[in-house]
Amino acid sequence: MTPAQRKAVVAGSIGNAVEWVDWAVYTTFSSIFAGQFFPSHDQTANLLSTLVVFAVGFVMRPIGGAVLGALGDKYGRKKSMTLTIALMAGASLVVAVCPSYGVIGVAAPVILVLARLVQGFSAGGEFGSSSAFLIESAAPRRRAFAGSWQQVSVGAGTLIASLMGFILTSTLDDDALHTWGWRVAFAVGGLLGLVGLWLRMSVEETEAFKRVAADGRKRPNALRTMLVEHPRAALRVVGITIAGTLIYYVWVSYMPSYAHVTTGIPLSRALLANTIALVVFLVLLPFGGLLSDRIGRKPTLTAFAVGFLVLSWPLFHLVSGGFWSLLAVELIGVVLIVGYSANCAVVMAEQFPPEVRTTGIGLPYALAVAIFGGTAPYVTTWLSTSGHRDLVWIYVAVAALIGVAVYLTMPETKGKDIS
Image: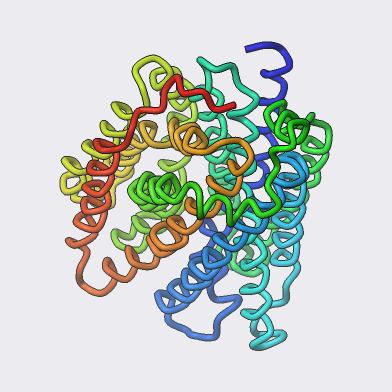
């Protein structure tokens, strides 16, 4: 990769990490601020209510994928990415300063829902824009490596949110944590958004988009063109995403809260295990990208899905309440997830030509994430708190089985000309 390509990957990754800090803070602190926005005295009911809002945010992701994706294909990846981070950070700051239910009544959950809808809209456009930007900025033989940094930055954002959770839960007493401590995390995430906004404004547009514009290949309606001319590629993106997004959200985003609610392990200990696993995950992701660039997308994706199909049952039965067993479960899971996360940006970008690439990645991916990722924490919590904890592993295994079928039957795109 040339110095200019490396600079683009670094700048794009840092901006993306900041974007996902704001998104991940919600799930990290959901069990803490639930009582601030909902009136029930039942802790589980409050948590389920906040997870419904979490899922509602995903409803906006397909809309964001379509609207912001079309903007990225018409006006450029840079402008689309700048808009997404401004929306995400602004919504995070609104949540940080929003009064509680006890102060303004039903307006509190309404504001929370509206803020989460804005964040969902932003997140829907973020994946397509940042993935297209990173892949188009890469050398042809290093596309998976460059694309893996999209997920490195997502994981880094989740790690920062998890680390803030660990610090705040370890240093504040319960009263301070539940009244104002969680607001600190949202405020920090929002302020970091200003840094990400500056970074994104400083990068150059990709050469692939410049060529499309210069050659007159831009389409007046990228969304329509994608749906009419590339329907099979769009459906393939949905299929690629199902197993990856469901398992990612269960393992990486929600496992600490799941373990805390179902086994009683202190949340601070669960978050520490999650933080350690995330560090390992981030270190391994670029190597997963390099492996994909060497042996292909299909073998590495299939290894991820087969691993969870075989290991879901034993792994969930190891979540027994102890720190070390939880850490082992998280580590095994993230090693397997590398097979998906190192590939997802590149394999989706390789399905489409550049004139519809941002929309082609963003909308189908966001639809799959909304249906399967956004509901995963709620379904997992409902199963585990209603006497059906033993069914959670089946939920994950079925998703993995779908992944095996999709990955084994899709065409290999390593080495494909994407210009």
